Image: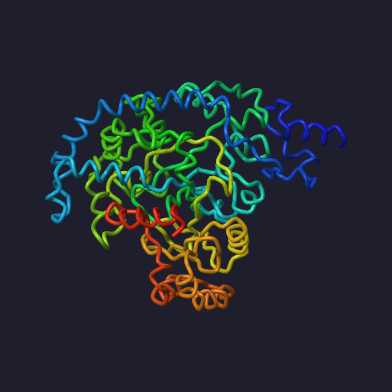
Length: 453
């Protein structure tokens, strides 16, 4: 037992290499050695990553600049213009590109993960995805674990070789030897995130019911955008464009047309089981205008054309994401139910995991936003501190706060309860993602904040 405990301690601090911890060992029964739990956080900045991110930024700036003229012409093409809402047809190619650029730079960068083991077991047989840590452990650890970190701390990942080798062979990050994977080396692996093209309230439930909205400002110099989802491109054998072609939050023009091309491919082999009713062989009907209409035309529902049904994003690579430092806020499902065709029991209203999230959010001054099935309606939680600004707004939400605290214990939350609350709250509690159309108000508000107004 002493030897096992020592071995775990060495593994924990990253001094002992190991193929994989043996979960049958008695050491895992110790309170300090529960699988996936950690008591120290990884470094926020990985020294080995700094040079590669600098190279990515330089390469992306050059490639994006070279792609500007082609993308400008693309904005005038039939594939973009044919389904554009009539009220937007007056926009010139230049104006359309300007709007698109602003939107892309301000799209939420999200990371979805499962709330609990029950939610993971419900979806994992369909999606074959179990690479994220549940809410309770994540809040305890204070960061979002990548697959390597899960692997060395007792996660269910079976093999890290292909995953780890991909960081160097696909993305040109420094090599990591998967046969000598310590916790300190696991900290150098990358975390996969996404931007939210659909501006869908609850993100991508395929990967879990809780949506962490990451802070784009603090991640700006340590994130990189792919053409699409790496796993999807791998399953479909897509090699037309190099997987090492990366962009940044501000230099991405060279990614757009390849991304749109992939979004219109047949769903193809390797598609997850819950897409079995789709015709995999037919080209899809995706258009960039589907996003434009969603972003700029009020009451446009969430679009699901092409691969928006499955992988509606540009994948975003980051290093370690710390909580709360790299977190803007979280989006929680109000209730269990069917969201985007996926049945989930990740509803947090009145749940014990909801209590954990509220405690964490209040302590760290991070908002919670509640979402329901329509993918659009969102409510700011008035019982969580840190977001209300100004005496007027504080008074405005006080009665709502008291009402919510009473309702928190009510079981069987559902969409009717959500929309009852939605109808009663002041506009200041109705939450919307940023849009080009309201950017002026946001800029004025930011200016007041900076001036202390």
